[in-house]
Image (cartoon, rainbow, N blue to C red; front, side, top):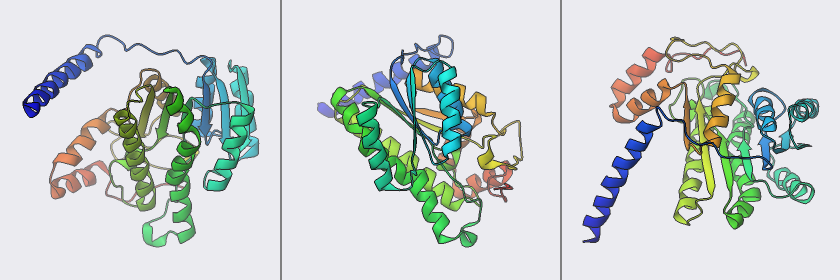
Length: 299
């Protein structure tokens, strides 16, 4: 009987969730108010991190900015302050160093208070094929792109759980969903980041902490310094993304509690096909889209 009732429940809820999604194609989702929230952004000294800081600032938040670049994070703090942030705090932090993450996190908790929105944005890419990549760079890629997420969650998630309030944002990559030739270590780090964030989200759901939300962002290449010189085979299908557009979409996803954000929209179809097609067909699709060819990046 339990099997029958639970099956009926799943079927009915699935129908409702699909109807709800269809409705929201025409009716905008309600945006939550994050004014006064404490937002921590790693890798805030440039690129997407800097733009996100400015967007969050305009919503009347308290910003905590981390970066390894002193001048970069200081400039971001200035821009965020002029863009409406209630207050801006900036710190030097090497996210690849667990001890430093914990040390700076403790400093933040003393000086600012509990972080309620955590944006793991810091990331690096070697731009080398696996055989050519030095071991030290591979290790650094995993430490920054993956392990740093573990340490920041350890530092700030307990307070979110205690308050049943917060938001975890993982800036991952479409390379965390589909393997890309020439980016083995980067793909591995982003696959891990996606899996980690999704798993923690399920843990929170299982413990009833529905006030702590998660958003996992998986964009294609973004036109920032990180992927200077990268080209796309079919720009209409997989364009190099404009960073301002990406940041607007990330903010909307956070404000509407969207769990997964794939950019561009074609990535939803591509990722879905990759998971249902047999290997020979999906690899053929990868070659067609330019994902299995040499990725040309000036990194």
